[in-house]
Amino acid sequence: MKVSNKSLKTAAKILKKGGVVAFPTETVYGLGACAFDSKAAAKIFKIKKRPFFDPLIVHICDKSQLSILSLEIPPKVKRLTDLFWPGPLTLILKKKESVPDIVTAGLNTVAVRMPSCQISLKLIKEAGFPIAAPSANLFSRISPVRASHVKNQLKNGPDLILDGGKTLKGLESTIIKFEKGKFYILREGALPSDKIEKKAKIKLIKPKQAKITAPGMLKKHYSPKAEVIIVKGEKEAGDLRAAYIAFKKLPLKNFKYKKVLSSKGCLEEAAANLFDFFHETEKMKIKKIYVEKVPHKGLGKAINDRIIRAAAKEG
Image 1 (cartoon, helix red, strand yellow):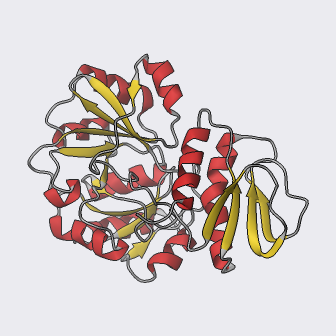
Image 2 (cartoon, rainbow, N blue to C red; image 1 turned 120 degrees about the vertical axis):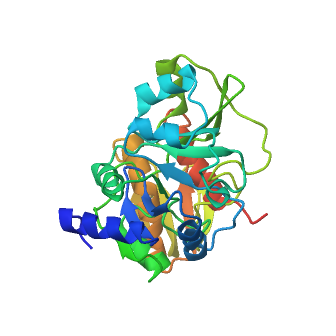
């Protein structure tokens, strides 16, 4: 259903009744339910075939809503919300008991963000409560950046899919955990970590891989059905059954599908196109995808993270 004032009201009514709605954010499409309704949240896990050990991100429409989710909002955390909210930054903080364990995977923390997408903000406001929403795709598969991607993967799962067109960023949010006065980066995302460090004048620590405390931490994630092979420049022979996704320059050899993430070398454009291109190859039933990494700086760190996880073997 196309986004309109009427469809937003319809979506909000569904959420109030314990239903599940897919909706656009500035990052990717989310699959949302009331953050305080355990039964509604359970539907998200069922539709996505998502394991219960993987926590959900709770979306808010006003910074004041953070206080109904988190036990405390330290000054250092408030500074980050002042600098980067609304936007693609998720913060992991100590949770209040009112947040159901199913939403936080039984952890004593909750992941929260305030999106910048006006459709998301209007929906949350209309619903009247925070919305728990992971990406609207099957677990470990490619995140959706268009409503059609949601429909193709989840079929009739959501009660409603709000179609707001292609998402702006094309990558999930950056996830930061605040613990004992320090900031830990758990997932690179649409807000570059070096930008956060520079603007907020903080040091982001990369923790040693441990138990899953945030979405997107599994070795294999964001993956198409096809085998993804990382290449350094065009060295592969042409393959009329395979796809080739380059950073800036199209390969000279022939492939069934070939695209450049950004002919200008723009990382923002590359990020917006990566998952979209993966979905196009899926529609064409391509079995093998060659992908070039992008420069490993700024937003490139998040793009490369998604490429590496897409190419990872199971386990």
